[in-house]
Length: 388
Image (cartoon, rainbow, N blue to C red; front, side, top):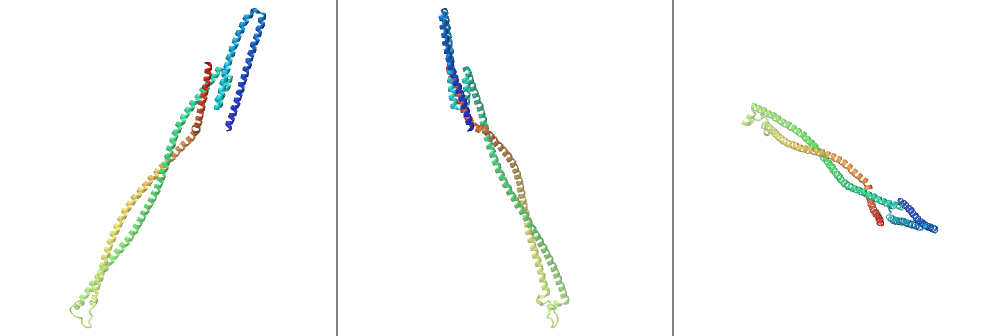
């Protein structure tokens, strides 16, 4: 506002100065007119004096007077016409300068008021040429601005989309890597737990196998010992004749008949014990075989399960490595994309003063310039019409 007020004050002062100059010129014109009239009166008086005394020269002086009058009138008429035209031009340009608040038209007022009419025409033509050149330069600049703004907007939009997509990809990759890490940790724990369980089962199986082997061995030894005992008893009974006597005749009163008849006899008892040991051996062997088969199946299932999980684990680990590599690539691309987007945004900020805000001012300047050109061309028409 301060700048506009200062500019207006300067223009007003300049207009007042030009108006004063114009008034001074008009006063000078009136003074010159009076001087010419007085000059004509003086010449007339001189002619009268000369004619009274020198009658012979009367005709010549009359001719001289007529010539002087004609010349003076012609000069007077020409000067008067030029002054009238310049006054008309000044009035028109002054009104247009005030209406348009135009510095270009205001700057013309002094040259029009002081210069010769031919020079005024050249001055106006020069201003028209300068305004048209400015208009061409502004048009070229606006064309360049429109092209740059269009490209920059397209560039900013594409870079923004690229950055958004890269951020989304990075978020997905981070989530996938976290999930893969959790799956890998869970798979490793399963493998560790399975290996621990298999180790425990193997230990139990080895203990069971050792115990069964010991039981079988003890049962076999016991059977061998019982068999030896039975054979020894049989040999004794056969050699002593107790078994034969007992089987052929009743024992004599008071005679010792041995322990062959008490609850089936000792031999029978030993044979029962031997059968028990034989059954223990058979049952233990059967249990050992079943336990061995069950352990073999467990071991086979464990190996298959372990192989599958190890394969899955390798796949998870390789996938995680691949995703991590992709994340690094996306991160690098994002960094480059953000730099490119920042550069596009910075360039847009640089384009704003001359092309966005300046573009609005350009429209106002264009409208102002076109009206100034129209006023100047009308001034040229005024001059052309006067000289026609």
